[in-house]
Length: 358
Image 1 (tube, rainbow, N blue to C red):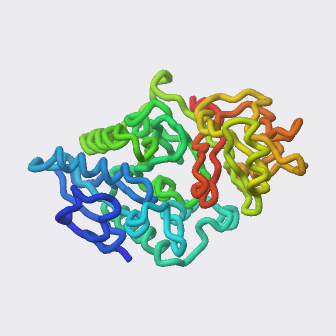
Image 2: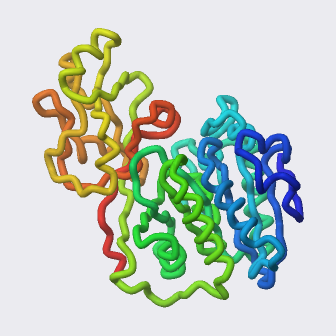
Image 3: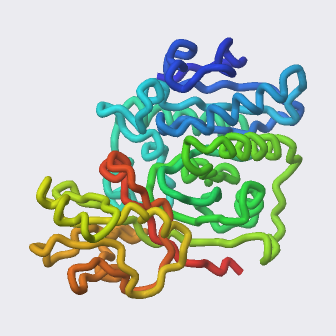
């Protein structure tokens, strides 16, 4: 499936995501030589509806036109066919950020089937990791957008000072996680410092500028420090659980409680969230915070909370009280979204706790 090039194809620096298929036939790995031979690996468009990575690379390449790269760059342009339709992935495809080679420290059964497959896409991701291992990759950056209201932040999969320094070069807000499995940054974490950068919503222009500046800064690094990060330079959070809506559960978003009856008449609904749910992201919630309102017929929590080891932790974080879904302990949400398609394809969001890395 993989096309490998040694130069930027004509038209890539000006193409819209939906037109990339006219320039490259599909997933493409592009190697560009620089003064330092160990390359920076950058992946973009692993999700076809997240264009900021492409816009950032285009901005960076235009700024570098005619100048030598300070370090070699290996650029992976991911799901071109999904980008053509503005979708996370097509119905006949796996999620391009859930199929990277499993970390050898993890039991495949524990991975919950997220990465146990023999598709051509799985083989391609394994091939890319091996290519970059052979090239002695310097560091890895995966550029993403998200659908809810979130600050820009970096995600890492190892508690290591080099990873901290790389992530804080993008943002002082850093999130450590080990689930979901099969993500790009986790695959690269065993061969080099790796970070996923979350650049806000796709329609926010600053996301591309911020990511382009970060890529430029990474390429100008001669090394990544291994000494500890200063306490005041990083706010570290630990993703402890994932919140999903089971397939058989119907959900809606409403502006006020008064809209619930109206929605129920139009379609029986199990749980109602407010249209400001994503405003809770990166806010430390107190015990008893209301997250949703239940249909009066429901007596069970209509969500599933899975901890980082794949175990059901729903009752540890949520309960039902007076027809409302409430928190049972303090935590901080991230990536809570109002996008129905993302909720069905991936999750409602994540739960985090502050982490003292020292």
